[in-house]
Each structure stands twice: as structure tokens, then as C-alpha cells.
Length: 121
Image (cartoon, rainbow, N blue to C red; front, top):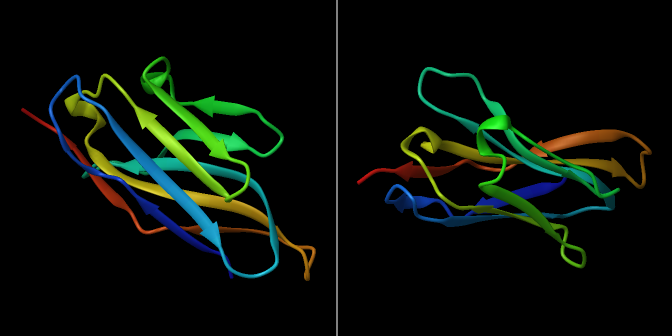
């Protein structure tokens, strides 16, 4: 089982920035994609940004132009740079890694623990 660890949340004022990090580790696997999702109270969990190891990205419309997802090739780690944050970005952000088990040949996913992002003055 791949372990996924996300970090970097916190409290920030509107217009501010935060960077979230997510690292996948453990076992024999090959990452195929990693992404960040968020869930605000009373809402479902939605995709924020996702990056495939083939190089394609997709973003929620609400964050396009403000958030950027990037990758550290050597570390199975992705970063989510969040700029121009708005109160409506407040949510628990969770990272997910999609991977192929090198021993099993099976595709699977693992979730990291959520990290709270609060945008408030």
C-alpha cells in the first residue's frame, strides 16, 4: 500500500498564498497521477488540480489562473501553489495518488490525510 502524506495548510488572509505538498512513498509502485481535492463543510469532495505523470494537468474552473500544480520528478511529490486565495477556497484539502503496483500490475489509489486551508481576514 502506498502511503500519501500531504501538508502545508493553514490560515491566510484573502489575496494571500499557500503552498501544499504531497509525497507518495512505500512499496514497489509507479505513480501515474497525483492530485489535490477539497471538501468544504456540507459539500462533496471536488477535484482542485490533477497532474498525470505523462504531463497533462487539469484544474477546477474556479482555481484556473490562481493555482498551479507541479511535480518533483525525483521524489514522487507534487506541489499545489495557491495564489490570490479567496474565502471560498476554505476547505479541507486532500491529496490522492494513482499508481500501478509493480508486483501486482494492478492500478490503485491512495489518499493522504486532509489539511485545512482557511482563508479569512
